[in-house]
Image: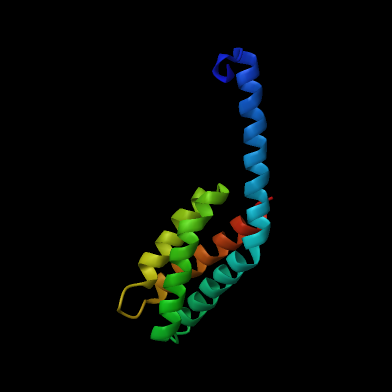
Length: 122
């Protein structure tokens, strides 16, 4: 029977399946990388506009949506820190009040760190 594999055979099958999964995730990363980069760039642009006190409600909404999507997807690609950062950006940017200089700097730092994480994933 299929379930009567020896422990070594079972371990080898798990390793092979893991390799297939890893390859599939890498293929998805390559496919979605342009969209991920676009979203990170949108966050950088929003952070810069925030620092210049020139962030429109529409731009803020787009940045919050992009951060939300990044938060939901980066963990899939083993970028847990990216998920955490994107969530932080989403929360900070979603406040209705105009962000102060400190918040603008935090948003810019988050966007920069996200860029490093995304570009560093191989």
